[in-house]
Image (cartoon, rainbow, N blue to C red; front, side, top):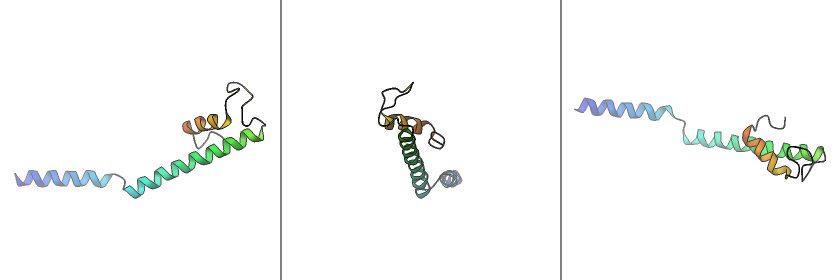
Length: 83
């Protein structure tokens, strides 16, 4: 009976050590938010550079706000949306 308890404890300990720590999780989430924010900034600048800010002038987003479109694109692919 005690052996089963020890095996269960070791199993839980092994599984818990495989996950990322809170610090690692926070860093990963922060990096993701930073990438998203950089992407949106690049998107807004892109729309300003082509003269389509604040309201887009070409299809398929005619009449939509540039920031809204930049956010949508960056949610899908923050690393490549405006590069």
